[in-house]
Every structure is written in C-alpha cells, then in structure tokens.
Length: 123
Image 1 (cartoon, rainbow, N blue to C red):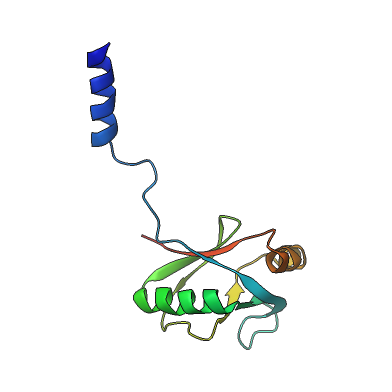
Image 2: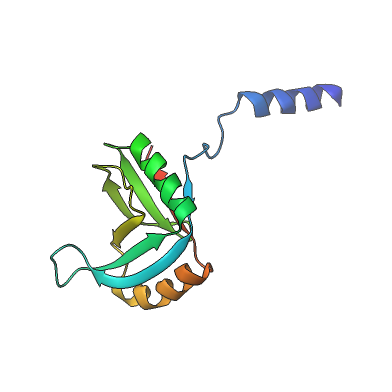
C-alpha cells in the first residue's frame, strides 16, 4: 500500500497540470451599455467602465501585456480575443464580438455582479 501511495504521489508531482495557472484579471464593472464597435453602425459592442481599484489593476495588467493577444471572458466564456496595442489606463474599454441578442441580458448582470468580466493572456 505504501508503494502505491508513493507512486501516486510521484505521478502527481511529475504529471503536467491539467490546467496551467492563468494570468487572469477579474474586473468590477460600474457602468455597462450597448454601443457599436468604433465607427461601425452594424457591429454591436458593450462599453464598459470599471471601478477605481479595477482601473488601477487593469492599467498595471495591460501595461505588462502590451503586444500580446488577450482573451476577454464573460462568465468564463471567451467572447473576444484581441491584440493589446497600448495599456488601458482610463478604466474604460469596449468589448466587441458579443452576440447582439446577448447584450441586453449581459449588461444588467455585469453591472449588478451576477456576471463576471475577466481578461486573460492567450498563452
């Protein structure tokens, strides 16, 4: 029995993790509204403003990941992947790629905290 336990422990130590630790940033939303991507009138988006603590965390996190592709997740589901060109320091961002039918449902949930918004690296 001791040998089986030792082998199981060794296998757990030597096995690669099933899910690598992510560089995940969770954000607290203060405002969210529907909009359109850039100058487009047909591609819907969600305009987001985060609280002050999230603004500071977002500025630091995005500064560390400039040039990388990041995932934008709502409730753990990737809704968009973008290349981060500059740090996001103002606490305001726009999320495109969300299904237009979902936007009306997601916005109240994001504002009241029933849905979560996260950023992650695509590594």
